[in-house]
Image: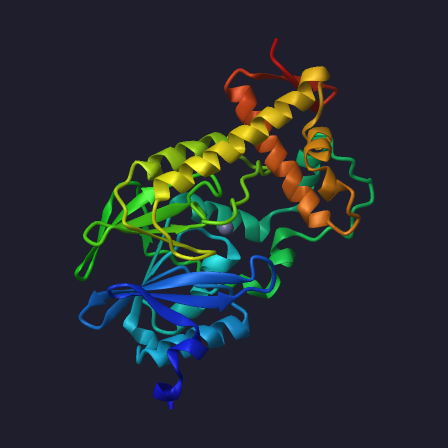
Length: 337
Ligand SMILES: [Zn+2]
């Protein structure tokens, strides 16, 4: 019987009036994603993010609904903060369960389509261009779609393409879309205009900073976008922040400025590296993130550190603090004189 499941076992709790936080398991770190159910009145609920498409996550979600006496088909609306598997990976299941309306930013639709078809060769060209030593025989390298495997079963039918600043009228709720590019190009936050609850996805996490890296297909200066998005969110009037990872919190201005300060510190570290002599993004990453590069098992983390370093170097370049030099197809950065 559904009503015999205690909310605790189902890992769900009320964080604001009519807002439920559900903790869903992830196969790798961070090990939990928080998705949020918003009561829109008239028996309809909106869901912010889906969790991954794996069976234990789907079962945890079903248990959470059952513990609250909510039928799956009462969850009519999906608000996707961005396309990553832990956020949008189970969106095909959302539809299969009777979900009616799927919202996502158009740039996320584009990234999603790309990630499902991305060729390894794009990443190889991108890596080599920025100094990554990639052997000629890379047949073992997995494609993004293979890395995400069963976690990512997205719906390709998007009913509503999100626009910055628009107000979504969902029953009795008015949610403003706040476009926050950086972690991904079409990442969006949602602000409840009446309760001032802010759903931030991965943009403004309380304990960790999200990955911001330059991918083969761009955009070119995602860290510049990310910092501008932090300023944008810091200026909002919000009472409670609901992040995708870590506990809900308030004082979003403070956290946004902490995150900006963290990146400013990293920017100075990178500038120190390229001050003495020009370096590629790969060489810079190996110095700034030396502990990652000393670990032979940290292949994925190395790739992430490389892309994150490149994001910092491109921002330094955009600010005029670093110059870019093309040496036989390999890009070197050096501090501006
Ligand atoms: Zn993400």
